[in-house]
Each structure stands twice: as C-alpha cells, then as structure tokens.
Length: 148
Image (cartoon, rainbow, N blue to C red):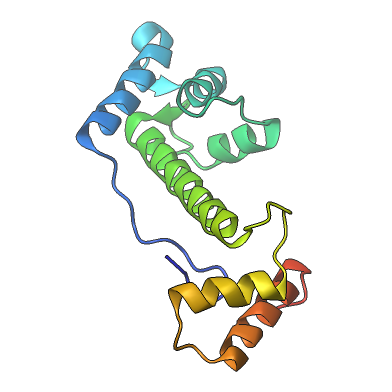
C-alpha cells in the first residue's frame, strides 16, 4: 500500500479481541497493589512486556505528561490508547520497510532510479516514466529533508 502526501497515515487499525485482552492483562500485571493506574515505572515495565524495549526518559516523560493531571498515573483507557497508537506506528513502519525491501532488489539499503523504474513497471506498468521520475525525485528530496 502506498500513502499519498507528506505525513500520510495508515488507515485506522483496531486490535483483535485477543490482543486487546493481552494489553489489559499486561496493565493489570504491571499495576502493582491494584491502584487502578500505572506509575511511571509500571508503565516502563508494561512497554517492555508489549514491545520489547525500555522507553527512554523522554518517551516516559511524554506519556506521563499526557495523562489526566487529576490522577497519579496512566489509567487503563489511557494505556490502551497509547498502546494502540504505538502498535499502529509499528505496523506502519513495518509496512514501509517491507515495501522498501521489495524495491531494494540488490539489498544495498538504498534505491536507485533503475530500481524504482523496475518496481513501477511491475506494479503500475501504465504509469508514465515521467511520473515515476517525479515520484523518485520527490522521495529523494524528502529523504534529504528538502522535500515538501
């Protein structure tokens, strides 16, 4: 799937019932003393359990500052929203990586104009070479931080 425009987002993704249940179970397991919320440390442990990495201080600060100031931590619904968003981003990045890998037929870690042309001949054979060239230029400029 291709996304149009800078900052294009993937379509909305919903967790399966079993995935949602797992997130709730992780929340409960990390909610020491059954407080009804996750403290900063509880949240870090939950992220490790679900995503396999310890969140940075900046990420933890960001998450903690986004919660309701009238609570002492992250409530279940807030946690579920955070996890869903993180999962969407993870899936979006994986999809981009998968598309890139399909285009990078020589496993160089970058795409040449020829790679791009070959890929588009396969997936969109009626697309004009001019359009393919424009897309390649746009993606090159965007990757250099110059693009739209």
